[in-house]
Length: 111
Length: 114
Image (cartoon, rainbow over all chains, first blue to last red; front, side):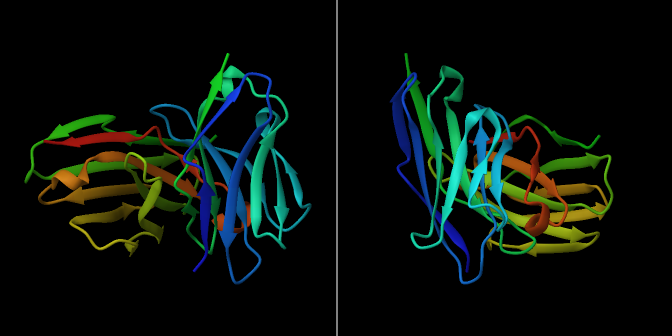
């Protein structure tokens, strides 16, 4: 079965620092991979997705992620953190008609 | 444009009472519909999904059930709530998730069982 594992339930960075949120996937077939963001007491919204086109995927709000098959990873990065990036981030994989999420990583941005 | 509505937004219920959370989608036809539960520190757990009217796939055996009486309506129910049912419930819709890759989420329903 396809699944994702997010390493680190909490990540704290200073404003302007690099953001790196880790996600590893498990899949027997080429996966469709996604990153979602959730602000407090809201639903999730899509940041970016990988669907077997370019391995480096650019998303909204300056985020990007790189698909690395050799490492079974799909880490999310942003060169310079902003206070508004503080939220919970979910990596997800889509087997067929459903979507499976990781446990989430809460990002804190310190001034 | 497509919209998704979920209600109630907040619910406090005693143990053993029934539950009904409703979700409707507008602006699209034959969507895939999903119920997720988010418990503190446990990420999103897929509870049910539906690819059509009357078609429900259950991912986790529990005292919850789902129904899809109309194309764009998805209901989450329980006959008797447990303390462990507390959490943030999210409804979502998508069209061919594996192809388009996006689920659109409602604002969520926070359930507290006392």
